[in-house]
Image 1 (spheres, rainbow, N blue to C red):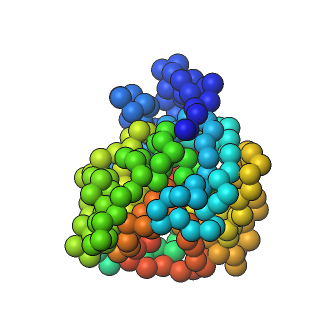
Image 2: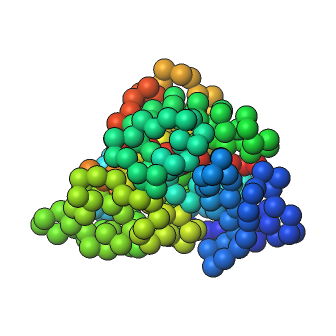
Length: 275
């Protein structure tokens, strides 16, 4: 089980003072949230508290691949803010003044964006909002956030896939091959996880910060993924997409590509350590 850290409730809004870059803020049943604006577009972020979890999947998990193990104890020692949805086309357009997506729609996730494109977006938005400090989440942060205080293959439980490749419980939280109709969908339409995050599984893959594929060991590790990133190296993406089977739409599944790669199944969401 995911274990939250001792400072879980010592979040940045606890003293009633929001981050300087937040244009709106509040707290609900999922915890603290803030908003940022770019022109007339807005994006909400959720507070992800520090904690411990097992990264990867157990041997018996359906769809498991060898690079998902052995399960590794990971400590996320610092809380962080995370977009509550994948970055939408509307928000991307407000920042970048163009839209590369194949499946058009303001509330659909932006896609056909490379890792390099994401860095340009982040630099542009950070330059316009002082102290925001946006970045891509590390692979460990992404999986920790995706699990939403669970340790099963999805945040609604382990997958049970029928002979037609459908996983009925998955369809409550993710757009994937069996229910997407061959396209992306507007973000936030399905059930969120325990942190209040939508579309962590399915809809579009999400780029992470990490350089290539880190191998897991059984030794506890603290805050992996902050190592120096060299430009030519492959980057990890997570979460599965509208065009992929249920076996790939799991919290532990990993894939990746060159940082200049893009496609209609590749998007992202940002994190921020700015308090």
